[in-house]
Image (tube, rainbow, N blue to C red; front, side):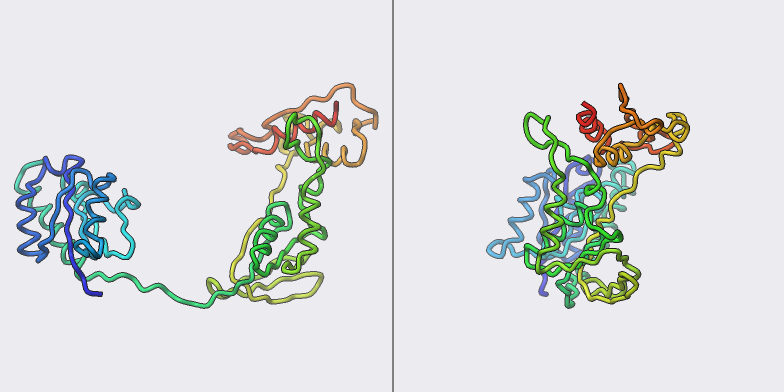
Length: 330
């Protein structure tokens, strides 16, 4: 591409107070051989960005290769990014102004050297040519829980062919094992049937979705956009060509046997919320120790969560699950 050059000097962050801009301009013109030079109070501000954008317009200066003498390219990369333009960032702030004594000859010479290098680099740089390749339109979704089902349906409804791989014999994941779903509408007291079953039905009957249950992804070869997925299902091994992979592999309950301080494993009547869900779905909430209905139920929150000895983060799921299960009990 034929280049038209511009250099933009930022006066912010103490740069203008530390070095002589008039001397910098002379170096740019004489040694950098670039005549279009502008100064801005703060180039990363909207006004500073507009100053540069005006020069980039074809009806304006038509500049397409610029040196921005300001801060490090590690910061303000969005504010000082300009599409289809060669951009060279000259880090005067970090490499000269903030690390050297202001208004001394050595600091000035250092800044001028960095500008010389940036002017040379912008003349050698070219816009990269995008890598063009074929891309298969089939989408592989790993996981048949609520997330995988939703991803498969959204993609298929947009016209893409989808292969859905689920390691269990049935779709739905943990959501399908729930007795009821948390209420989603006012007054939030009526428990709902899990919505996952409607999604399962929609996925199984969608013409663009191939469902593979009791299946695992054994290997993934190829390159971006052209991937060969080796899938083992019911003793058979198939290799399918896909372009994209969505990983929705779900979650696993924390190992409650590690929570002996809460009585799990020591008393049959201390259970997890997953076990409570299974009990409710089976039709009756009873004490595991004697099969009788409990007179009172206590819910222990953050069991194993927010704990340096176990999981330091919040499990996110437990609060709503306990409120829902309290309605089971009531």
